[in-house]
Image (tube, rainbow, N blue to C red; front, side):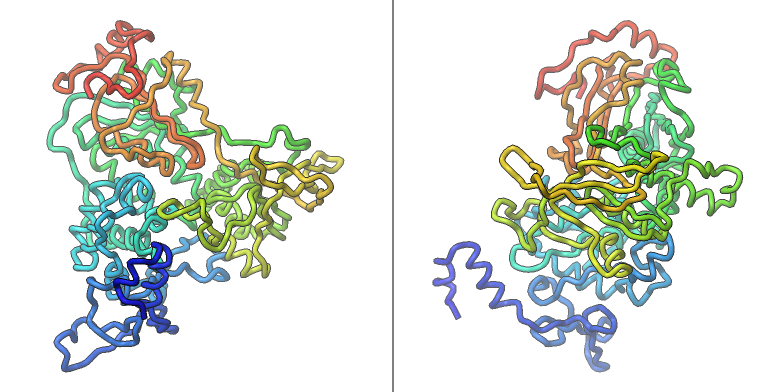
Length: 588
């Protein structure tokens, strides 16, 4: 074995490999029957009220944190069995009925003990967490069993951990320092275990602001960005009203993310809490269409637009893209979720527009585009009882391990199997993904319905993907779902109505400096710097746009009445000066 002095002479990567071989043995401490670290109790041990846990060296010792990342193995809480969950719309995560799958208090403590308390926690930086969660701090609180303090710490940076703990892709784990020599800490599991325990034990209760500023804010859009903005502004004492064009509050959370990934009861629970805290919600309010934006300008001191990116990226240049059976992902997912909610509430027969519903039942389905949304479309198609499902991805298959141009702590662009892929493999016997292909043509029948797709293989060049001639292939398809992200287009009907001046970059005091990874970060508004603020949260693949329209900045200490709002807007006009790039807005 190399001495420490010889070890220092090795390259950093070789040094890590050597340390890994020295400290991490091949003993598997996980019990195959329970799926958790093996336990042992000694009736005469002083640690009898907490069992000893098997370590990677094969010994049984009390749980300790100093060398936890060496002694214990990463053990994420598993999803429900694919063949079981594909038959229902319940959450992927184990429920109270799946106690054998859920981690108990001991296993949570073991996993929290693996947090290294490293000098620079990259998991909390811009490369790991867009909202800068204090991950090492609440990991340690979980280890100490201080769950009420853990949820308080988590809420200090994250408005809705029950959402991010379920749907966030967890870039924090990709940036975890333990991942350099071993597998990263199960941060995502620990996050939602904290918030689930907090709801269960009654730690999350309405926080009624002690004082009110007398200022009113209208927020357009009730997705994650709109709800986060509403929460922040309400806690600052402003009177907040949220307008939503759909029939339910939640936006993407309600209709864009399928039920098996995020239960709508979880969304409603948080919305009801916000309502108890004094936030007012108005549904079926399509600003610029059935509600004049001038009504908002006249009755509110400020207007915050959190409308997201609503224009999907399509394949208009591909012949046959207008055939019946070619749909966008959000159209498919939204109509499915509306049907599920109507079915649950017993009013499906009276409200369901059957001819508008998009079903994958008995069909050959092709999902174009990977990512989380593509996986959601795969999972939804499986629950519709599709005949087959294939997923096209433009890029080549990722490597099993990080490539040289994808170093830590960047998001690891490696091959992985998400829940939808696992379900297809469990049912049909193979992974649904086809890499390195692009759609050349949609083929239809005499009735204008989709019957097949023609693809070409692609090669990646310096100038981007290039189709390879002579590699055409026809794929049978009754339903094609386009899941290729969104284009950064603001809600023009609203922007035109308020005569928006050119957009300027704006970062709040609380957001991450890198907002490209999570649109929740784009909504943390920390001060009232203008009468109208525009926030647009975009698809994670695009650069989010955060913009501010300065109509009439006013002092934080003033209390203007809604009656004068319209006059102030008219006085300032659309030609109000804007700060230069990098210069803070007046009043910030």
